[in-house]
Length: 259
Image (cartoon, rainbow, N blue to C red; front, side, top):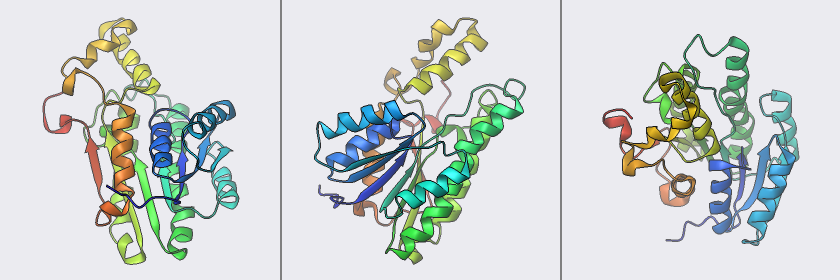
């Protein structure tokens, strides 16, 4: 299936690791040129080398902390012309309302919640005026299947889901699409850290974090490549009727018992 993505320009935040890097590889495989954003230069350089070794596409890297809106403004100045924006940067700490102090909560939301909002605020009008494009928000299942032991993430993700629905509702009228995906457990460094925290709190031993795989679909988390495949398809012309919605990538977990 030809996704008609060749020569499109894609900007991916949090693009040096995990889901962001997997998306970068898949977009590159479709012939897209890339702008990758992260806070760590070494990780970005490694990602660039890895992708360039396999695909002959243009890759630019940008070292920015997008929790600061001034850096968002500078990023837009550096690369104003894009066709697809993938908002992916951010990791919200696990814990209940007493475990997550206000400063950690605010810092996490500045990067993920307000980071997504500010990136959309800046890029939506530019993309619209240039003929249209797609904004894809990588969110998280906790915004659908809320968890008091991941309270900051549940509330933050739910906010981004509402934001995505509202921004995307009339986007097609302006040649735009805004949509999102809500992955459940995905095999990344982040999920390992979260499950270790949960295992320590609930089982008294962080080394039992893999116990939570039992009962998951296929008894494992999703692979980053499985998420990336869906993201790239949704950003393509093959999904041109989809906007103002979020897709749960959870193996059906949201509609069955917990794990």
